[in-house]
Image (tube, rainbow, N blue to C red; front, side, top):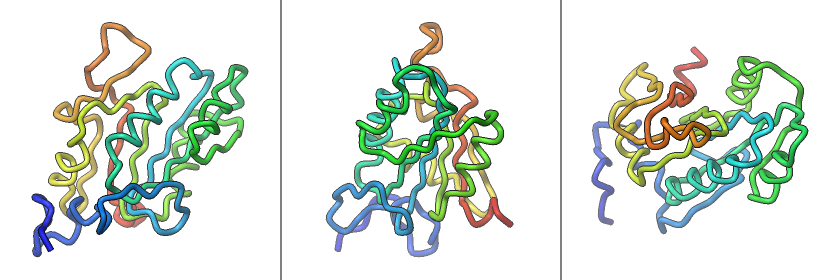
Length: 173
């Protein structure tokens, strides 16, 4: 078989190994996903759908589980996430509590935690970041992937600190 450009025999952590054999997307897997994406949300209906769509679009070849933790929004955030076909949890909590809860849900090799106003722009963010995940490295808002807040016009297309990608097993250690 032809190898993904980032797949290296000496790098078992490589994101290239997240691609399915057929390259087809598989989402909403509780235990078999290689990438867990946790999205925190509170009254984010205007932009949450864009965030979810971008995650799906930029991870289409990876076995991905997407979970939105909604902090009892009073708008249609819960319905937006549900209608996008992702898992949704409604729970009153602080932002740090939400991130911890999402992290604890991850059973995947890699975990990505983002806020609901982050829109992943680059189709290659997963490969770009995967090259950096060596040993105990975690990435927080890397500028070279082009993620950015949807809610701030001056930040559109610019990185924000609400992006955390890491190897789940090493973060638990």
